[in-house]
Length: 162
Image (cartoon, rainbow, N blue to C red; front, side, top):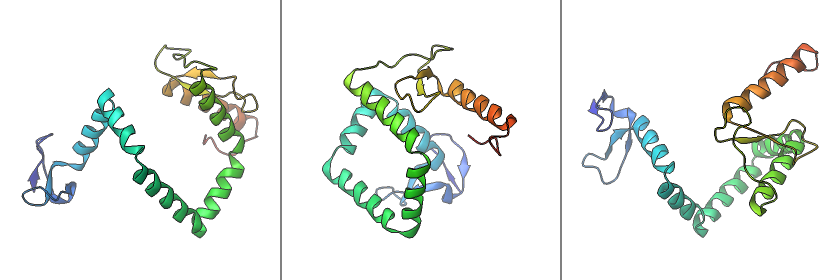
């Protein structure tokens, strides 16, 4: 058993990650607290900036590309990639169009249409990619759930998964 320095709980050693500089080779915070601390840090402006700097380093981009290329060469990767590309091509296209429009300034990100919180772009119709409704994650999920229920009730969809 080891005590976490963040939450103060005694937990099994298996709940702690390894660390080469620790006196016993084990981190002082449990894995759950490490995740929370990292998430909190990345939500700050300094944390986001440092993360983007790291991700833009050539060796990191190259490593990510090599990992992806290696995965795509496996049978599972090949099947998954082609299935996803064919199944969601209209959705991916619409997302890419909105992302590009945001980058170049054709459209501006708006607050949630319902509650005014930070929002995501919701496409009621993927064939019109720039026709988006801005919804927070909670209302975005509710919109998809409502659409799935309508399709399910009409018999056009087997399950209520969305």
